[in-house]
Image (cartoon, rainbow, N blue to C red; front, side):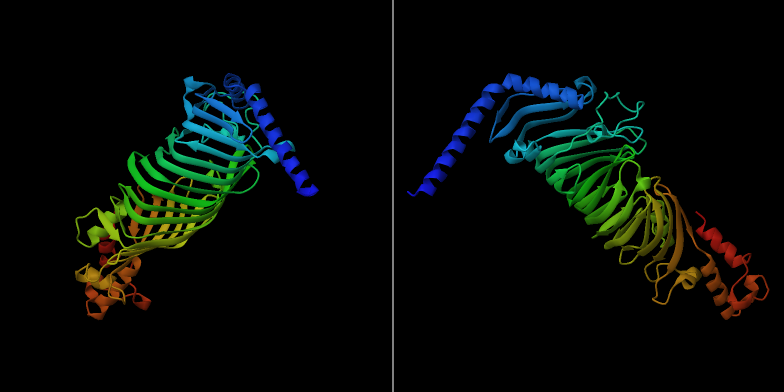
Length: 439
């Protein structure tokens, strides 16, 4: 063996012995009882929360391993449990530690349960962990320094078989649970972008109505603080195989987005996105009932074959020019805006109904060149119960033209029509249409 190889072998042996010696030192310096006490002290000092731990071990290569762990809400378990799980493993990256940098190679959690609470002021029970102080009247008081946050890099964060329970104490009334959660976060940092992949089952209630869905998400996020608030920039896609809600049943639902300033104050949000879905049903909504009434159907739902559209968000207001619901027999193309803060809509819709679905004179007046009755309507107010008004002006104009064409001027009040063939705003035809479409 030449001299170079001997030196390399000697160096490797010395490094191995040093690692073994350091591992023995760590295990002796930090026995389980001492580790539990140290973790509790740090949790109280940095998080102002209590910790419960089953077994705990530490090693140079294995890192920190904890079983049967739980982290309380602020300030103790009397306020509830924020996080619990079967096991957690934290493996630091050794070389950055030698340079004084905190870099974690991996963090893995098995069957954890997170409880996320949104308070009445829009803050969350984890806000202090990310550096955003809560208002004093919305949650238990925090201790000085709890808003300092952390600066660290986690190369990979993995969750397997997790549960996230979202409890809403705000007026939004959104209470949801994600189960069977598998989550992978690569390059997590509070200072730079990181990637996220997740899948799970969603269930719960929104405004008292049951919602279920299968979720699959992938994207890229970054976090920042502005004026004390935690904001996120996000780009990604959310896919659900099936969504089941009292007002909506859909398959292969997908949303793609590229957003900035996402936080508790949606007035600051901006960005772009698109939405698509395969077959489904829209049900038990005022607009649905009105459309079915026009087609002489006593039904509370409309089936569709495809849903698609693009949107742009500026300061919390979503705008679209091409939101399409294609039901085959019924097609709805919508343009306008919706506030993401108040969910108040200002929309205009073009409704195409099945051929010959509207009979009589009204059918003649509303049928377009493609043989389908076509109406325009405005949709204004809260999306939960909007005011829907069918525009009657163009229908009245066509009605007047048809009546004139058939020599029935007397039915328009006995007068001559206005220039261009349009009828008077006070004509019997106009009044009849207004009465017909009055909500």
